[in-house]
Amino acid sequence: MKGFTLIEMMVALLIFALITAAGVAVMSSTLTNQGAVRVRVERYAELQRMRALVKADLSQAATRRTRGEDGLPALTAFAGVSPWVVGGPLLAFTRRGYENPDQAPRASMQYVEYALVEGRLERRTRPALDGARLGPAQVVLTDVESIQSAYLFDGVWRPTWRGEATADIPAAVRLNVKLKDLGEIDQLFLTSGEGR
Image 1 (cartoon, rainbow, N blue to C red):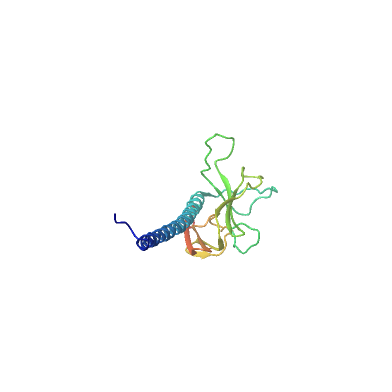
Image 2: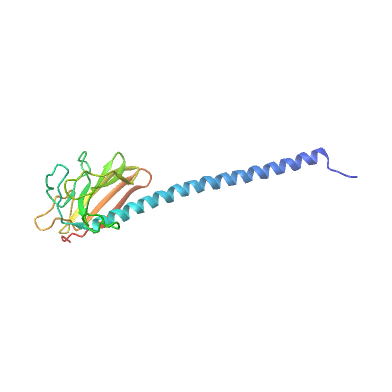
């Protein structure tokens, strides 16, 4: 009977080990790439959710002024503050179209604020328009380095917005968002404002 020699078996095992090592390396690379792609897709999904939420809010902006938690009236229905103002919101306004599926006794409008807090773009609302305390923050976007805002009125972009004699709401809002991983992203949102 003829069989395999020890050297032939060792060569066969070496070839099998090399093929297995190559397969493991290819599989590892595939899994690493799949993880990177998943992280990138989730990041773009987060960005799209932020855009959809801000777009929905701004397109429903109303000229209704509110009263703060302290009972004092707001100076304007729509405030677009510079992001460099410490502790202040980036955007503050009242929006229409606040859904009420439970038929709760409340207004169909909602007070909304957007603020940049420790690298997070947060959205906060009040349960009632006047005199209510802000609710918990909803994190809309993470890993934000900075946000520059501008407000369009009568064809001119302004760095802040406190209302005009002829319009409470600007025609459009531009947010230039600088993210740690994606760089600068320029977002343009039309509002319900009359100053177009």
